[in-house]
Image (cartoon, rainbow, N blue to C red):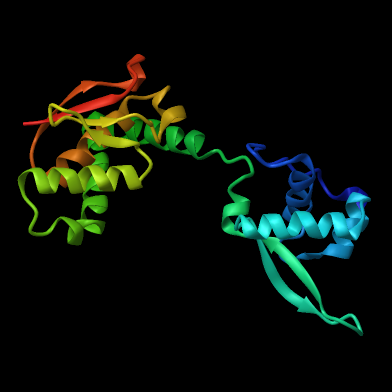
Length: 216
């Protein structure tokens, strides 16, 4: 295939990664199925093999690239590298756009009640997945385990002095800008995990510093 006809690859989110490492990731994105050796990367990026190998070692240590295969070169086998799933996730994703479109179509096709049923079913699926962790736990023990689960899911959850659940990170931040359905999903999840009703006292969607839920 003529390399000049290969469409340009998007750059991954920078974060703490240096420009040389970002370029290595970008080059590997276009050759994920076959992988690229250090020599191939060096030629494509027009840098030394040693420079590329340093970047690959660091990226492999971060879990962003992995060895796909060992290639025979007539001498010492060369490692062909590819992106890991974590490396792939550094590149632009449009999950929020897709989810927002799905929610709009569910609402327009099945109405508000249909959307509520869907959100409740999704919450039930999550509840079933973590059910073993909640078995035999009641009261404060169950509440603390629920908060731990939410924290592991990325909500930045903790209990305040009043026994209320605080979540300082909205895991659906972009989607929440366009619909309050995700807020209702969060409420449904908490209700399912706690096995009791609750009040949604504050919401980051309204500019609050945290979403706050008070179990009844």
